[in-house]
Image (tube, rainbow, N blue to C red; front, side):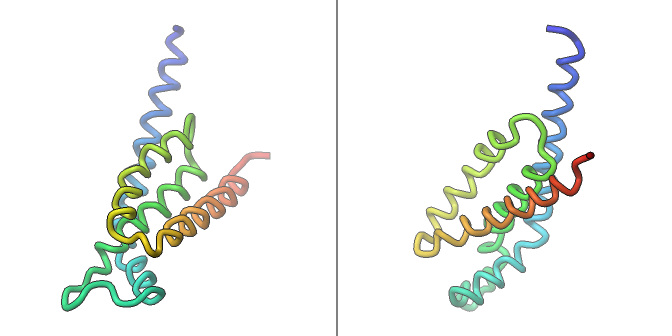
Length: 124
């Protein structure tokens, strides 16, 4: 295997890991907002303890992971997304099964925005 292809593969892996870190950071930062939207749509989240951040974390992670990998991901970006979404899917299946369509809609919205960003950033 030539040395050039190794460096390209390593660069691709490192870029995708960087995108994961960015998506996780954005998910953590915006989780209260996603939890607030979830609470407004489906009722209060928590009792006397405010659980907006906890409920919103997997939702924000799903949205930003799909958006960022669709817009800026390199090689095997859909494989990376599928593997990295497994923990969020497990949490969503365990926590809230009644409104399982909401994370799917967030993922679809993230994918559509990511495709739009990808088309905007492509060089002609």
